[in-house]
Image (tube, rainbow, N blue to C red; front, side, top):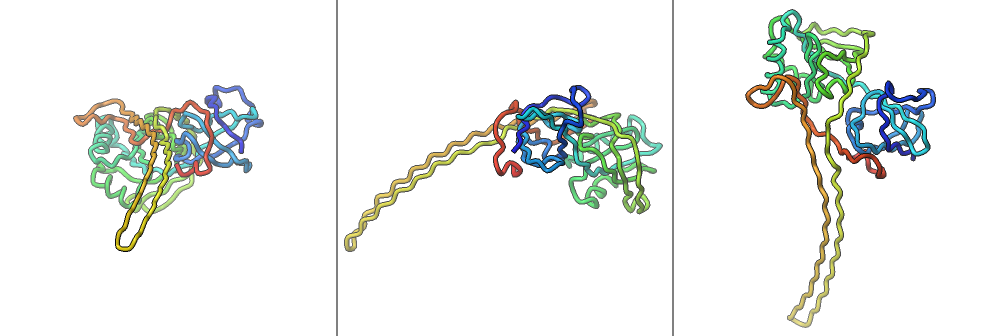
Length: 269
């Protein structure tokens, strides 16, 4: 298995020839893990052990010196288009409503639109946001880069490849060839938990007629190491509950500085 354990930076900052690099496509979940086992786009077995949340275009170095270029699989987002009603006060109100709803969805605002990653049933998500929409606002679904939600990406253009409208928006779909914008952020920490268990059991029994003697020895040695760190970014425009204009909810992954091995069950982390 090829091991990529060094983070070199973004492809715009690293002097590599893309033709010499292997490519790997990661899901949003995989890119947040400190250890993951996957395959490159050409089928090479690859282990990734880095202390970074990876973004589209990141470059990793492997033990044999060959670079690995990271791409992100697209994600689906619910998009609320505020239309003509989208002024600064209304956009802030949407962010406040998002926090007050306590749904713990990530949120990105771009121009007239608010983006939420689809993490629940679409009908349920629409029922949560629908009652709060101003007149003229519509709901649709777009395919975006998951990195859109790394830091709220205010002002960033989503990487839209297609979109569909919900029943409230007319029940039709469109194909688009739109521009792509890059947003990249790192702000997470969550160490993996390691568990060690050593169990020994000894039992002896002595039976004589109606008398019973039992000698039981139980030895248990448990070693547990846990370290959890949580980093939530909150920016711009505090409300009374400490939530801000751009909200992110979730847990970052371990900043272990690289190194280590990838276990066989790494994908179960």
